[in-house]
Length: 87
Length: 503
Image (cartoon, rainbow over all chains, first blue to last red; front, side, top):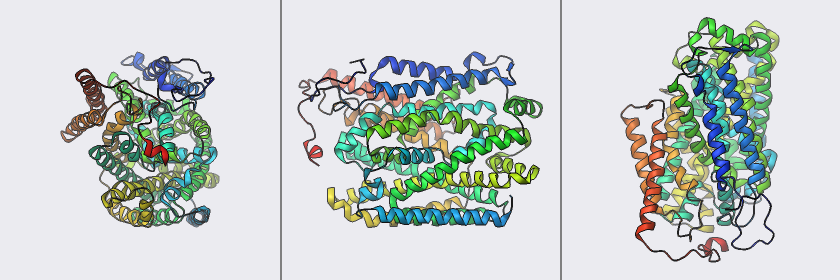
């Protein structure tokens, strides 16, 4: 499974296309960040406010912004239109 | 709410604009074919694609149901921002390959991919039924939201039923005139109104009610449990919702058809990049509306909470009459969101009834199926008549409708995510029997739980449990098959589908 984001030099019938889902590291990162969006570390704890908003809300919004950034990064860097897409 | 004459004038202008775009869409069609009608001739560029994806994804449920859900659940419904981004993340699991396959096979409906890939009548018909049921459910939710929106906008002067029926007529006419072209152009208009409207909502609420911190302070006074740290069960529901929408919503037939309709891959990628960022602004705004609703009206009941958006906007006009014009635009944005989602669902449903049922039952293939273009409006009309009559007797909250459809739709996820992993000739490829086994197992688990009245198992949705069983069954079936049978080695130079490639 190629991990380079460089386009292939000589396209052929067996060229492997780049796709975000074919990068296991990317999928693992996406899953981890998605898991962290849930405020699990705050479950059952007393409410703490930071700058007027619950701390768990800051946490979840921050992780959600990170999820957005990771998704955009996957589209920009890992999704190319080379070959027929199959490994 | 506001000046009734102004509301009627704005509503009338909006309807005229929609019908004009329908006419222009009709003129832009080079031929009256299924591909032109349902996929706009596969010609959607970046901007229209973005706005139509935006307007389709941000439905009446987003603007009416999500604040209602925030009102009922509290601030923890900020999870909706996460799962709306998760939808775009979910696209990355199969869309790159599906886009290529759609170009090669000239697909029209999502079922076309499954038929081409698996060649299983059972799988094709079952998936078509699931897509159709999902769309009926989705369209019904939009029609109900439309009735609530019109009633809320006019403060009850135009009753719920009139809102449902009037909206149905307008949607049918412009869709019949211009197909997806008209729908995408009206979506673009509606998407623009939606963006401006959402920005105005934030500005107005911050001015009149207070900053988010001030709203949280008010919530802590009137309903402190709605700002409290989420429990473990809520966190599990959060993750379950992420999976439910991340795997389920990318399978919306109308979303898949927009992917088919993209002019070029680069434009599709750009549109999805913007879509991945959009919820940070759009859905946060929507949750803020629900939070303001908690602070202002802490004692609404179940169905009443679905109208919290309109109550909050009515409050704005009451406290500051000068806000009437911006609020009017916001109300148009709500109407726009509902109508744009409804028209997309209707068009997609019509395409499935035409191509996946009528054409297959009649045995029409290729150019023969083009004869059925004239049937599309008849199907649309029949669907609207049936669902319109149901919408006139609302029995569920909007959120309940949304949940039911995902429990079923998500069961098709393995067929797309795993089905697009390998070339059909690859010995590792998943077969129709693997997918059928998984689909049946997943549906049995999800629907049994639902029929038994189980809506959540420790915070996990029945559909998510079903899809876990589904994926496990698909993987186990393939594993057993590969272990028990010998296969010729995979030769990537052999095209397994020469007929499709030739077309």
